[in-house]
Structures are given as structure tokens and as C-alpha cells.
Amino acid sequence: MKIQSVTPLTFNPEIYYGRGSFNYCYVRIETDNGLVGYGECSLMPGAVAGAVETIGDYLVGRDARRVEQIWSSMYYMWHNVRGGVVYMSAMSGIDIALWDIKAKAAGLPTYEMLGGPMRTRLRCYRGISGADTDELVQSATDAVADGWTAMKFDPLSTAGYYLSPAQFEEAIAKVGAVRAAVGPDVDIMVETHGRLSLGMIRKLAEGIAEFNPMFLEEPCGPEYTSAMEKLSQETTVPLATGERLYTRWGFRELFEREAVAYAQPDIGHSGGISELRKIASMAEAYGIAVAPHNPFSALNFVASAQVDASIPNFLIQESGNFAIEGVLKEPVRIVDGHYDLPTGPGLGVEPDEDFIAAHPPRPVEPERWREQSMGRPYTFAGGDDGL
Image (tube, rainbow, N blue to C red; front, side, top):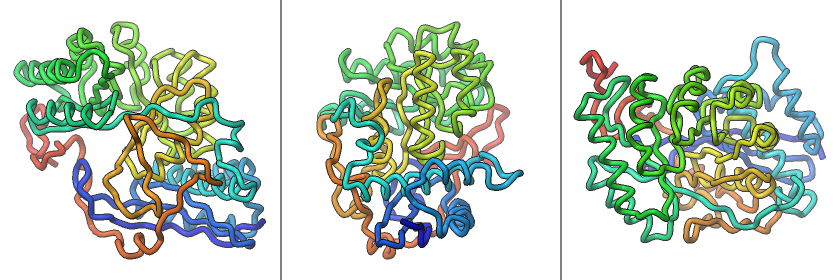
């Protein structure tokens, strides 16, 4: 079963999400016996699509069933190209598509190829947002009304390294207001996108502790493992991070230092299904649970679910952007905050290539460093607006 073609599929569904519309990138792999597999690798879609094509040229003719061999070949293919968001995203989408093919060839769901399910129903969480406290609370109560039992949000508004006294009180008040609105039985997660200085994040962690968050996500950027370690020793709030880390090597020091309670690898750029399993296994050895990250489409979600089902230390899965209607032939449904595993072969879903072709990529506003998501320019600590 030889790889015949590796094709990036980039598109823009023109659905507002977070900072605005977003270009997505899928990978389509076809074999010489007609099987087709799909994966997602949506970070920096234009650059990633080029990497997919370059890697794909070297994969044509290889046996699609040798997923582990192909992963290693991709990772070590070029001496000076190792890791990084573009290359690892391309690798991830290819790896996911290969697992889709391998399982389809066997007539089994992908999770059966990973050892079988430890669970058939996965707990999930969604993101909430609002321009002010009232809107955030309304978003939270709407989520509860829709059956969600867990949700995540960023309370920092336009703030960066430093929170003024007023901004600090506003952030704490938002967390308290959401907790009051949803009650004690709903899990809330607080996200800061690594925006604050270590001094400010210490203060924030202390301030939100009384509201019993499930975790504080990415309190420090991926460069600051030592800061994460210090913070984890100083706060009772569980810390989570990993969306900007790639491969097991990227997580190794974080685990060795016991700097995090929950690991959040994103299957679409941390190395695909193959590598997410290894990261989860490494985390288990350190007593760390896994809560995979996903702000992207339902295809990335379903790929993550294959691994979630098969690992012992799964905690909860981020749902991602389910506002995109039409990109999958059959929509993925989360009911009462839980997802029932698909039973079809492979990933259990199929992208609609006609929909993708009808929604080509287009220029979008980039995510400028720490810009606020509601359209207002980011205010730097020194007073300079924007970049």
C-alpha cells in the first residue's frame, strides 16, 4: 500500500472565531489502492502547506502502513530542520492522515489500532468570551444551558506584562463572577496566554485560588520552564501548559521539573497521533494528566479523541471551533459536554472536499503579539499602542 500523493488542502470557512476568520490546512494522502486519509495542521496554513508539499515529495512510493518509520524519517530528514511550528505542524497533519489510512485498511477505528478504548465517552470543554464581565457571564451561563460542565476563558482583556490595580481587580472579578454564575459543580479554567510577568502571574494565581479553577493555563510562555517550576511550588492552583511545545523532547524538562499538573499538547503541531501518545506516556510516568489543546477545527478534535480514548491519563479535551458547518460530511456532535467515540473506520469522519474547494484561503489579519481579541489594539506596559 504505497503513498501516491500528499496534498495540503487550505481553506477559509469565513466563520468568525476569536480574532476573526482563519485559514485552515488539512492534509490529504492517497494510496495506490485508492484509500484516502486526512489530517489537520492549521497553524500558519500557508507556510505549513509548503512544508507538507516538500515532505510529501519524499514520501511518495513509501508504504503508508509504516507510520512509525515514516515519522522518524520526517523528523530526521534534514540535518538543520528539526522541530519548530511550521515543520512539526506539517509532520503532524501527515501523521494523522497516515493513521487514518492504516485504520481504514484494517476496517477499524483508529483508537482500536492504538490498543483499544479505555473509555468510549470523553469529557470536553469549550471556550467562553466577552468584551466585559457581563458578556463573559452570559457566555458562561449559555454554555451551562447547553449542557457544558467545563469552560475556559482569558480574563485579562487588553493587559500585557503588567496589570494595573484596576486591571488586576477586573481580572479577579471576572473569575469570581463566572464561578458565581455557574456554581461549584462546573469546572472553570483560566487562560493567560503567557502574557504576564512572573511577578504578576504569581499575584493572579493567588487571587483566583479561592474560586477553585481546574487549572491556570499557560501562565508563562514556553521559554520559561524554570518560572513554571517556581510558580508550581508557590501556588495551590494546578498549572497546565503545552500548546506551544513540540514533541516529547519539548515536554521532557517540564515533566522532569514537575513544573506542571496537566500537559496540553496539540495533536496538530506537537507531532500527530504518534507523538501525542508518547507525550502522554511520558506524562504518565511523572503522574501528570493530559488535557489536549485544540483551538482548530473538528478534524483536529476527532484526531485527538482517538488518542484520548486509548490513554490512561486523559483528563479532558478542548473542543475547538465547532462553528464551521459543512467542512465535514457528517458534523461532530458534543452532547452535554461529552463526545461519544465514532465507530467508523479511521478517524470516523470525512472532510467535504467540495466545501473546501469552495472556500479558498484569503488574507487575514495576523495575530499580532498579545493583541486583544475584540478589535482594540494591544496596550503595552510602556503605553505604546500596537506594533
